[in-house]
Amino acid sequence: MLYFDNRSSKNEIISCNSCHNLDTYGVDNLPFSLGDTKELGGRNFEKTYPYFHDGSVATLEDAVVIMSKLQVNQELSQEDT
Image (cartoon, rainbow, N blue to C red):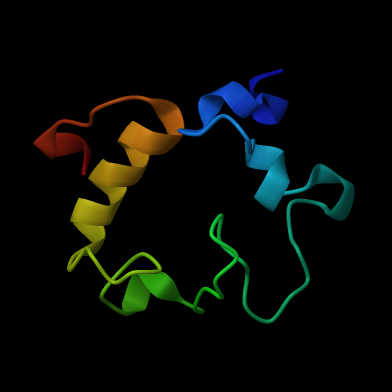
């Protein structure tokens, strides 16, 4: 199943389930989630910027475009964002 397949990540070591574990209904029950780099993430990220752990993206629209390439290997059109 793709959800558990590590090959979907860039470095092939994590799957969707690595962060969104179905045994805990997709949540980690932590006040701040750990990213794939083990850095603490923020809350309500859609309302704040810059985005990503390193702050490299200024808009939510740009973050969506980048994450769609990384997570689902698809490029979104301008209408999709």
